[in-house]
Length: 300
Length: 182
Image 1 (cartoon, each protein chain N blue to C red):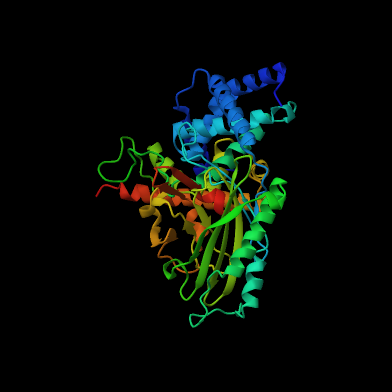
Image 2 (tube, rainbow over the protein chains, first blue to last red; image 1 turned 90 degrees about the vertical axis):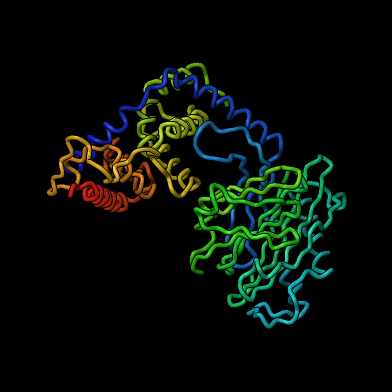
């Protein structure tokens, strides 16, 4: 038997909603939306969504799934996309090759501390092996002979301390290629260590519409108090939508095309709990806006 | 795959018969009429893609209602953390209470005339809890049907319902207290 409270609640919920105006021809609205949806799907299929979606973390085996999206804001009629999607994500190769190479160079991958003398930077050997991995991954994904793929390293940077956890070390590389079809592929290879929790690394392969498309590096579970890093050499502004003030996120320009998202929360408040409610929007020097929908990228 | 003419006609009849009801549910889930229509549209477009596999002898309305609640929960994770249901007037207790306001202290909810106070309290519930309350008390779903719709356990529905009602009581009691005349 329900209480008076529950009975009153039922009545008032009905009265709350009954005042809504009735739409004259809802089917017409749905018909138009269905047609628009079909157009969007045909466009996506033509652009090629053959790349797989999973990027595998180097350590721990967790899988992060990223999905492309150009939808910008909730509520109201969905506008046609005005920003470039980030593309899909795929494990581009064996991030373990990074670790293996570090081991070959005599680095201790157990505990990295601030006293490490050898800076964690990409060596020529690492770069060439990473590039080979990238070409192999692109070839496998696009069914193209590896030898026919010309690729380059477009970004190779030791990450500044301001974007890393205290005492951490790290670097980031971006490989890229343009296929004969005109499709652009970029890969992010990053290695970030946490001073107290060991190391982590990851590689993402992105299908992008432009070689100027920024990429986001997500911290690993091991680097729990690390924060997302954005590689955007062409960026003029990076902002959070709807509002970094409301979400208390600070966007930091660390220089050299590296940005980070940080906030003064306790260490145990992981980054993904905040970025579930936010999108990251990057504006390039030519005015192009790139939107990274937080939940769609960060949801495992 | 495109629908046959007969399937399309079935879908049209479904939309025209249930659109307003679905918008009302969506309104209680998201708190805004425009967003409610967008949510219903979003779900119906997705349902249209699968309409040929929806069992006409089953309960398409139940299926769509469940999709609505789940999509609202999913969408809420992308929305601003501070949803505002009514951007305008809410009963904040500043000034006189509305006419007919009955501050019966024996039941926190009885006598609360201002519907906006309820909307405000509903807004403050977490999305999943709000969906449970709306499905249970607006759509009159049983606990079992609500559990099935939201893919939750029966125990979770019970606890979400209990906590949701408790939070609504507390919020509405606080509203009444703020509105008390000295």
